[in-house]
Image (tube, rainbow, N blue to C red; front, side, top):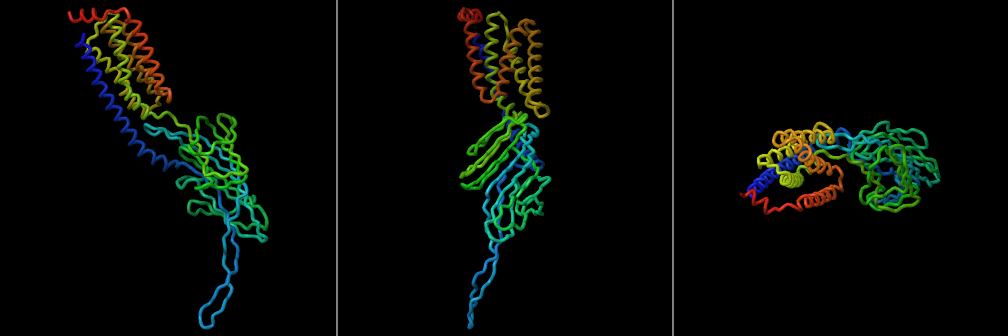
Length: 408
């Protein structure tokens, strides 16, 4: 009996090493794929976007003294242009985001389309009409902006792109509050944000309405949460509304993340030895109780059916969804085990005992990794239940007699 246990332990050790190698290869493939495909996704789709408010500067003509040097020194007046920033009185922003996730190899990318519509009100307190230059920073340098429209007081104005910003000019009447309006359609990756400035900034009469057609989003750390939230079809309407705010925190919405096939397959492979350990333990107990004589070579082939699940999963997730790949690998692995043990023992033991063991400790154990945050708890509960059942089933076994019979 001791030699048989040692042989089974050796098979378990060798299979565990194979799983570690497989898990490492999956991680290597995932890392190399991310380096290659992320740049490709960003070049085709766009990068994370962060929108900032526009600036408005008015041009004034100022008169200043100019002293001429020489024998007949005199002082003359000269004129020069002075640019003064106009205060931003209010911001009314509406953004609609449509999630359109893309899969590249072993990874999913949270790509999205967004529609921006913002109206900004400035104040010209001057007693004279002024020539104003409006500068609207674009949310990302590497992006596409479709149907870009710029208007001042409901009148479309020509604009030019300069230093990752849209610049438009208009003449503003004295003591008025011009409305600067911008709208566009674009697309980005992973997150969308709105920043008031690099340092603590003062914001007046600000309202941002962000409408999504999805749930499961999150907010980045050190950002402002919405002041209100409502249902909006299949998604949410998030509102940030402030009459007077001083903050250095931006607004940033993180897109939902799908289950990543590569990292998930890697984690399942790394924890596979725990799954096999439970299975070997339960099978050994069942064989002892039912008088089934499984040779270590039989345990070797059983370990191979386990390994086939993870090997097939590692290369199948490249081509189909992780759920479909998981189902196919489960059927293949259990079919290999049952068809083998039907010939070694009988159909009753193969299906009722060994098949059920593999279903619980391979399939359900691995499926627990789909529920992030609950994997450890699920495995712990399974381990405790396994211990309880094994203790109850073997309570009346005289192990000294079992080992003595085997030795004899």
